[in-house]
Amino acid sequence: QHRPSSAHAVLTELARLAGDHERVAALMETRTLVRAAFVGRKEERRELSELFDNVEGMQIVFVEGIAGSGKSRLIEAALSDHRLSATTQGRLPLALHRLSSVEHQGKASDEDVISACENVESAAVDRGVLVHFDGLDADDLQRRVFDGLIQTHSIGSSRQNICLLVETRQLGAWEEPEHGGRDRHHYTVLGLGPLSQTEVEAMIASMTGAAEKGQIEVI
Image: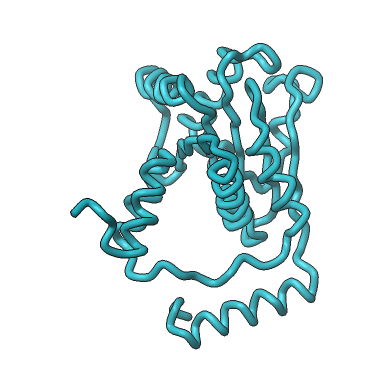
C-alpha cells in the first residue's frame, strides 16, 4: 500500500531523499515531468558534475555568463548527473540549499544571516551540501551568508564538505581586495561563452520536438 502510484510520485520521493525541498515543491505543482532536453555545453557539464562529485572541505565555484547563456540549466543538468553518479556508487548526493535573490529584499538582519549559515552547517553534519547563490551582486543576505561561510570554514581547513556555487553575470567584483581576491581564496570559475551555431540549432530542434509532443508549451 506504500508503493508509489506513479512516476511523478517516484521522482518526488527521490527529490525528498536527496534533500532538495524546492524540487519536491516544484514536482507537486507541475503537470508534466518532461521538458526539452539540455543541449550543448558538454565539457562544462562534465567539469561541473565532477566538481560536485568531489567536494572536500570548503569549495567555491563561480558559473559566469551573460543573461540567457544557460547558467541555470547547466547547473540543473550537472546536478542531475551528480545525483545519478552518487546513487549508482551508493553514496549520498550533495544536499541542495538555495538562497534565491527573489525571496529577500533590502538589508538582511544579523538574525537572518546567522540562521541561514546555521541551516547550511546543520545540513552539512551528515553529508555534503551545495549552497546555490543566484544574486550575490544585489542581495545583501546572499552576500553576507557567502562571506560568513567563507570566514567560518577557511578554504582547505573545513571539516565539513560545503560547495558554494555562485551564478553571476560578471565575476569582477569578487576578485577585488575587499573580498579577499584570488590570493586569499582559491576558487573555480566556469565561464560560459555564446553557444555555437550547431548547439543553437540542436536546442531549437529539441524544443520544437518536445512542443510537438505536448511536453512543453511554447509561448
